[in-house]
Figure 1: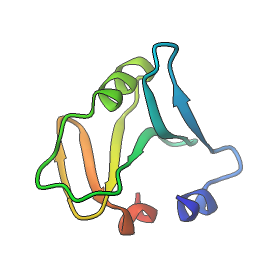
Figure 2: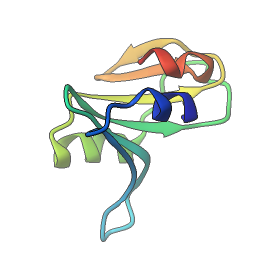
Figure 3: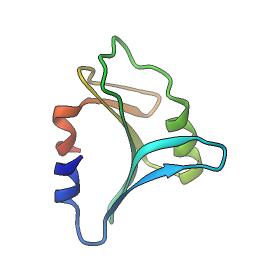
Length: 91
């Protein structure tokens, strides 16, 4: 996340998101060209899992995409990209 923060433009921001009902997402990247949610999971995934917070935030904030940074899985399902955290700076 620090590498992503360092690459941002002056007008870009990264922030934590929580709704009044307790739904939360680790990071929202709000840039000049795109806005997306990032959920960090320090675990191995065998397959993509349903993450309700990402689905909810994507609809509420009209996000183009959502990302789950994890240890090993590289896949896309239902508009959610699962990316090994080592590659997060490439997003």
